[in-house]
Image (tube, rainbow, N blue to C red):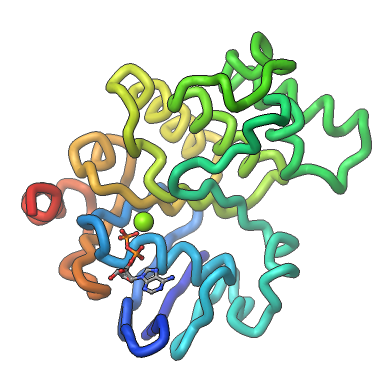
Length: 230
Ligand SMILES: Nc1ncnc2c1ncn2[C@@H]1O[C@H](COP(=O)(O)OP(=O)(O)O)[C@@H](O)[C@H]1O
Ligand SMILES: [Mg+2]
């Protein structure tokens, strides 16, 4: 479904990743594990067009994304939850979530919000609160719900567990496992290999912009844990 081949990303003279290739099969949850600075966000940002691609190809269902302008890529069915969550703090929870569904009419938006509230019940109870007063875990749920509100076929989660207490990691893990049951394809990044390996099916270990290993989560466990403790 998502096929990245020989991807090279540069920031000025710095090469953040070179000749990186990976595949995300339809319906799977794929984890990219790597330490801080490994190139995880660069990869995610290249997919959504936030960083330019120096070389290589990114194909979603056969469509070459690098040829599509970044502002048109949302229409390609990609949902994105950024590292650090980046919710709009003064906007309500509901408005944050529906920011991803601004093209829909009011009735459809209500339906979408109701469906997302069955996934994350706090969306119903905190709908009219400013997102900025929520805990980190709740803000992460808002960011994920915002990414899902456009009903994407591919969901990108950049470090969804970053800085969260175990109780929130558990709840977000349950949601990610539920996405697979719903047939949503997920590519997520994490530094924390232990919880990440529990939600994914396949994975890759990334270091210095290179893939060290790829495989099923069982095949990866040793290499992924070693990377976490680098
Ligand atoms: N905007 C930028 N300008 C220059 N260098 C950057 C920029 N963003 C990231 N980098 C560099 O690219 C490398 C990969 O960073 P990043 O993709 O953010 O890694 P990760 O998400 O795995 O922590 C790092 O060496 C980082 O310093
Ligand atoms: Mg990052």
